[in-house]
Length: 384
Ligand SMILES: [Fe+2]
Image (cartoon, rainbow, N blue to C red; front, side, top):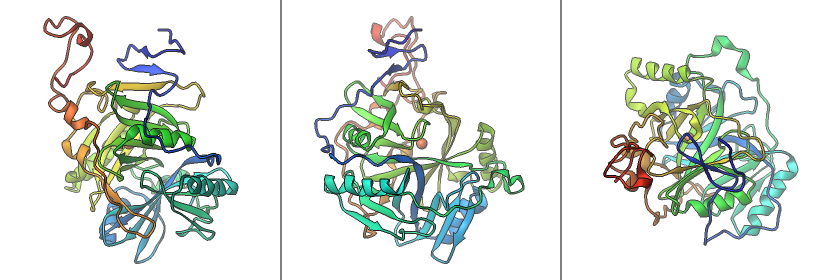
């Protein structure tokens, strides 16, 4: 099949591809004149937890993350291939919430650029030359225009990359931090702002009018973060990568053996979006963690944007396994720069769960279906 660079092309896999995301907003956040910082990648999440011992047990003893540093209030954890101080900070606090979505930038000057970028938008910013947490130097934290606590840093303490320490690896080893997923009421507004911040959209779910979710990247994978439509600002999940699918199955086996299978919320299974294999877990506070592996390279400048129809029941799971309702509705609060939970704003656009309810997993249209309009024949499972 030949793909026309200038138009939306339907692929033989059932979704459309195009050169540019078709996401438009009539309510944009004004684009600052200050250049965006050069963001390298997702670096770490600061997670406030209510029972530090229970969370440490989950992330270290069950999932096998490595402890870089800890005391009675904080645990700093990293994945086996990481060489910066940490990918996850568990901090004891009064409510379960996210304290920071942190990105690494290319140079010390890019921290200045991030500060200028957000100041021009009118966001609250706080700069600390010695960093906000251990192992990280000069950083800026902002309450971004969507209400999320974002952090940008370059200076970091290097630690040993444990990739060669096979004696420490478990069968379900988490090798890298892969992405964040954020819940926000207005996905097109969020996508436009993230594009101003230098991110590129790789995939989206829409019905041609309403956008339900969008994935965006800096590093050359499907995403560093995704925007999921819903009441927000809230954190949908944080995702760690394994090398292969069997590592994810090993985590399921381990949870079963520990009689902890109730930590599994959804999966394991293959995504449609991203083509990755997935598993969603809930930690002792209910924070959602995804284990994710084997998405695809997106680093070419003309990498095609993939558009999924919201009624395609293989978009969220390529085998058509239904999505559990809690996956659509539940998410974690986020904190402002004073450590107080941000107010959650309700989504007014259609909800993905509502428009696909009764559809996920149940019906299929075939090319010879008599009672379907032509445009629905042989397409995919449908919600109505
Ligand atoms: Fe994800």
